[in-house]
Length: 81
Image (cartoon, rainbow, N blue to C red; front, side, top):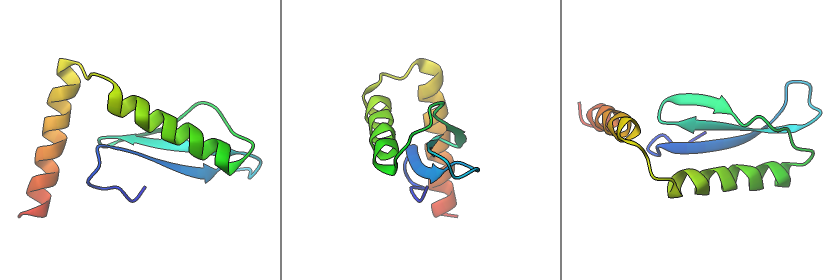
């Protein structure tokens, strides 16, 4: 996940046993994974892109807006010490 300036990010990776693909996601500084496993990399990439588009289009509630501001402020201060 090389998107340090982005609030949302995803990465497609092989599962630990190598039998399937999974989508790891990041929202702010919280990392998790989508529950589903995928047979192919292209299927996992499509799922990651769909998740990203859904997150970008979703209206955040007040708590998430506050968290986003804290996240943004912490990244701005890290860039300009």
